[in-house]
Length: 294
Image 1 (spheres, one colour):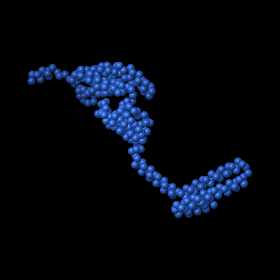
Image 2 (cartoon, helix red, strand yellow):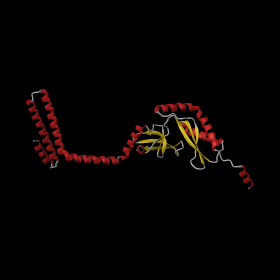
Image 3 (cartoon, helix red, strand yellow):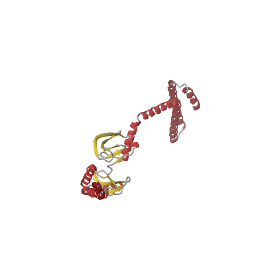
Image 4 (cartoon, one colour):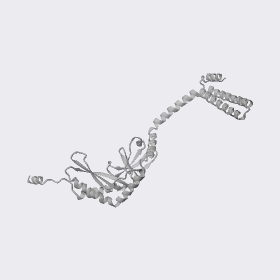
């Protein structure tokens, strides 16, 4: 009987017209209802056990429901397939048209989940560098700091960065330790200059400027280290040597400073040391006498 019904439904569905599909659906539902009524009546009359009767009623209902769903899929299969292809095509077109917006939302989720930075932090991504003043689902706004990567004064310009950049580009957070940071700057010298004296003067000047809050920096760095499971860094000012090329000596000066005073302390140290000292190479006496005679 079921095979005959399936063949009959197939012959109707082949016609492919929408009215025929609705008619086939109505007939299928009607047949299912009739079969449900006949089976229920037969089970109630033939089965005497209450538990067994309830079980057969449930199983017959579920079986007829499954046959109904299969019949509907058989009738509407082609239309559902066409609809699915249309939905996929629309979805692909939507994704292509809104690719940048989707990347912005993804970048926002990424930077929020990773905790890359907060409002007030100084960040750098690609050539954009500045203090974060606003962030939302699509963009992050910074006040530009520069020019370049070693300057710490605001230029007065505002930059709006699309969050899509955070998906593919690394972010440098210069305010990772918040209230106090370890600030580094470089002073270049020639190999023949008195860079040893310069090293000594810069170290003394850095210690003098950082001494008032050095204990606060130690305490803050210890709290950060305990909170994030890091080694406690040495916060005392230090001056190290770097030789980037033959004939050049760079003094790398690292000092602990308050987050908002890195430029002020750097300029104070540079002004004090360079204005009170001359580290240029001294000419030999023989050369000076020879030039005088000429």
